[in-house]
Image 1 (tube, helix red, strand yellow):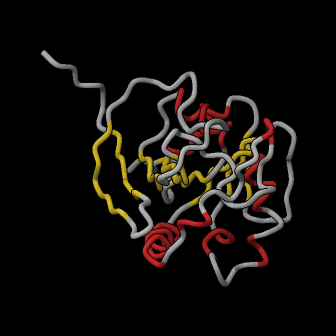
Image 2 (tube, rainbow, N blue to C red; image 1 turned 120 degrees about the vertical axis):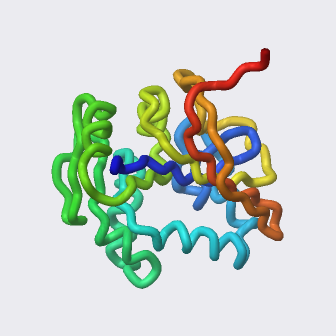
Length: 198
């Protein structure tokens, strides 16, 4: 059975995924709203997040997200042990080695390499953050599932989940829940081509 690529993202109403976790996470492009998910954290959202984090998975990450995670997760095994045991596939043309193992670096034609990894036995591939890598995956129709936490906030600018190069596709909602803080947590699974009206 083919491994699925699952994109898990904190996203604003206007589609921004940049720097949800903290003010210094990613200030590129002058982004000044880092940490925008904080006010919406509650037990309900935490429960849904933990459920996803405890599924069997390997990680598929962009270089910048990997650089943020590499010094952090090895020291926080009590929070998310799966991040340390998972194979981490990292899209990068510049980094070739890491002490955070197991890690495999993907350079060159990343889309072709991800398509190949999907055919291999193993758990699903979870993508967190990784804005640039996401555009490659989306434009090559390699994403099977979007598990989105949609926050009731607009940010006006920043890195977006769906940028230029998004291919037309349809999805079905297989699960959804609204947290007390108003975050819509929804699972979209790929459902083929776009149906059109007659």
